[in-house]
Length: 217
Image 1 (cartoon, helix red, strand yellow):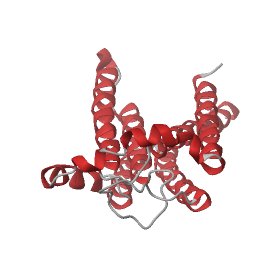
Image 2 (cartoon, one colour; image 1 turned 45 degrees about the vertical axis):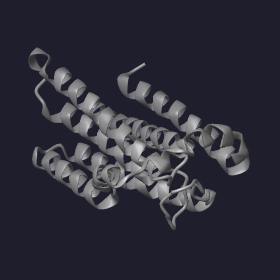
Image 3 (tube, helix red, strand yellow; image 1 turned 30 degrees about the vertical axis):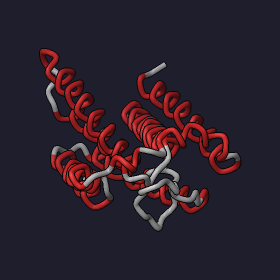
């Protein structure tokens, strides 16, 4: 099995896990109540000092800065004549964001009603911040894989460093969602599964077509 096909299989597994979670949340939300309530006390830990750290951090995982970063990375790839890679990077982000918004409206899960929770008008499932943060990390890793030279393990080292820093960033974004009391843990897990699943599937689809075209030349 080729590397591209393997990514498609991984994407299918991740998306299947998301679909399972989606149906449970939509049809049997009480199944998660005991787990979700474990974090019901976190919003009480929110202080002005905590907000001064986590509010600016959370603002980096919103659509405008994330879209701007994707546009910049896609533009660099395009200028390097990596047109298909540029198209995938930007298109994947748009697809994930759009699917996330549709699912929010379909499930229409109410926001947590914990003490000291921040008020939000939109639905809870999935977490938009976590969805975009996960997409951003995947896109940066892809970009580094396309632009950093592979000699002497340089690409591998930089990608691993970026992955480590990205995981810290993602954990902090998730913590902000729990501290502000605006999401359940299942919302956060669903976002990671959705963004990762779609990314693997679209990658496998787009670049399998590229391979077929190149073979035909």
